[in-house]
Length: 342
Image 1 (cartoon, rainbow, N blue to C red):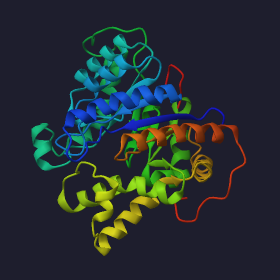
Image 2: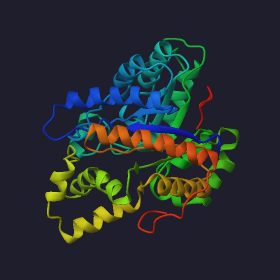
Image 3: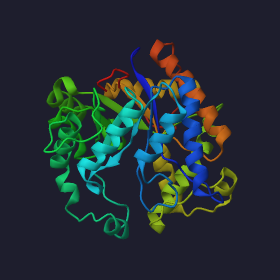
Image 4: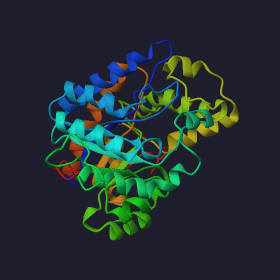
């Protein structure tokens, strides 16, 4: 496990009572911090019309992140290809590559907008996701300079493409021989990952994505995850993914039995606990999936808690890579490369 990489997806989560612009500055500051901590990759997201996420334009945000950092790879987790013309995506990421050579990744997904109104605003019809395979091939041609027109700016080596491999995405990644970013149920399906590796050949590379929280105790780590868990649960009922609320505010709510059930289900898919407990859980995850890289997707309300958790996870990964002696896992929880071509 000595070569397992550690990366972070920051979704630019907004906070209740704060302007959205604060979330943008928070993302840039976090990128600087995790670069100092030795993370290999820092990605941002694309969400449209979502109150809890300020990042609707990954390319623009990545330009700011790249200007504020020096070494860490920067990328998208991901650009939703059904929302864009492949040429425009290629031009944006070729421009980022020109500005920050050797540091840019292009992660793409096939999700449509969160609501019908968003999909209409994006001019994305119901069949847009069905074009993903063709759009992906067209995008790669533009990046490689073999498209029907030449996308600019020209670069020596185009950004590598990753596929967000939820559900059918893994099949697209396999057939294209591209790295796959996997999460959710796929993290518990080693057979599907093995089929992907066999089909993708030399291009196979698995990034395991999960919510990860390290704290001084399992109870504290669980508590730090509650703002995100509560927002996810409420979005199932309201149709709106809300800004994060403080831990005290969340604890003051009186969730219904159904809400409690959903909170526990969400937490069961997270990796959390003390440093030793998280190291053990990550060891099990890596053994099960054979992942080449861990990508944390964790959010919490307070910046100080977030920064402490990011630092703790960096230390945990040092332990995991070294194969240090690990304590047994807690019973309450769930069970990529820095190279230029990834």
